[in-house]
Length: 263
Image (cartoon, rainbow, N blue to C red):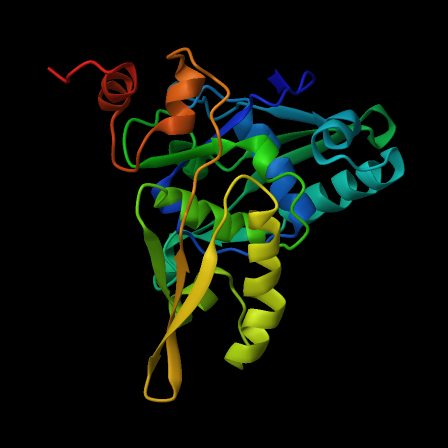
């Protein structure tokens, strides 16, 4: 069991890129609980199927900056909802759907919760060698819009590119919007612009554009992606996780960041 008790600003989230491009719908508090667990892992190591996580009210207070009352409410609601939530690794393939959690238990009068990730999910957050994306937990915990973290992760997956171009229909699928915001003007008002506001208040500065085919808006473009300043200088595993490029292996990232040529 891993107990999350001493949160610091150096916690790093690492995810397989397939998980970042998966389709799901989670509230902001549900996403915070998931990320709190992932950020305490050594993503290079294997996770046993019976691996458990304990998240506390104090964790949410410390990392998300919310009151104790709100943290306790958010933790209970998040875990109860996560127990019912599913994720589609490929939005176009129904057979790729799985659950986030398979077991949960509230402890200490509801001030802590122990949870277990679904075993099929574990390969997407552990034993990561290539095609993974990393970022600092502190850069997303203050987000308010439920879509901000997913858009942020897509951007970070392409952080070494000059722009991120996404198909509007595909984005709707992975955000599981269904019949919500059918008009693009509403999609931008309630999803895109609030998410951009969250992201630009964090460690990135992005601009927004769109592509039309005739009168139809088919793609969104997020430009001028600028990474935040790195406050870690040593070539540690955490530093490599934070600065690895999509598609790099650990060895390639270590060689590049240390200035040494890959053998």
